[in-house]
Length: 341
Image (cartoon, rainbow, N blue to C red; front, top):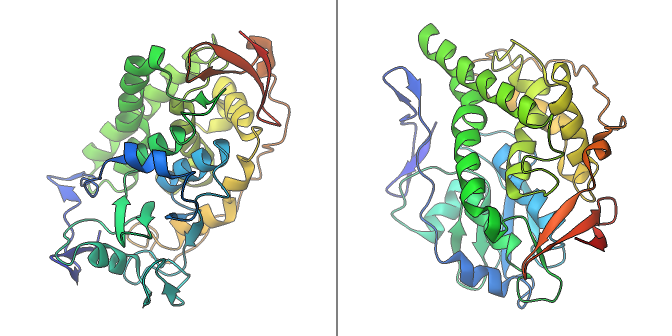
């Protein structure tokens, strides 16, 4: 991991500690409750920089789509060669919103926001055009802001209902540590012991989720929450890159019937498929993780049928919690309520 140190690009790598992969903290965030209030009132003020290959980016793209923020939060898709980390415009100059200057690398945005910045230069990034600074590069906080953007509107729904907040936070933490980060600990493990320990945590969590989803349509029964959408990007990438590239080869997603059907259910929600680019995912990992794939060979896609009927309706209709309390049954293709609960 190459990062800016005190505003200067460096090849220092602080990600391996005692033979184990660590994930450094994200940039400290400002008050995202204030950002949430402004998202709809000042369209175009906040810009999202994201990558189609990055699972953390996809979380934010998902929430932007599901909450209908496409017209309010412009997106810049980063990608291409990572000579100095992510390139916000595929290596071509990119004009920073609100500033009369161009950059070529994402880390330049960090140092524009803070001239002495030390830390990760990574996606997603939520940029404030009016103040010329990064609001946050922490996907968990960005999706909370997106979720709350319409909280003051009649009939607003939320993926973080007050009745499930403790349970949601607890399951988020477990899934993040054991599965979403676990696949990276396995893939980048520098020794056998670290790899096997990470692999055990990955499949222990997958087994727990497989059992849980035998009883409910979503992770919290019929009510869909942000935990489902935080998990989805990991499932999307599992067979495509984690199973082979990260050596998580014990089982595939398609070998776990409840998780596989559940993932297809989530894929069928309005706007979700547009956040998935399997070609970008494969290239993003196989081409750019040269430390574990030195020749940059991109594996052939096995071609799983994500459009196949999932049959999860047998566990009940999809429900979404309302900000004001209660729930509604949702038509997932249109994202329109069909009945109050």
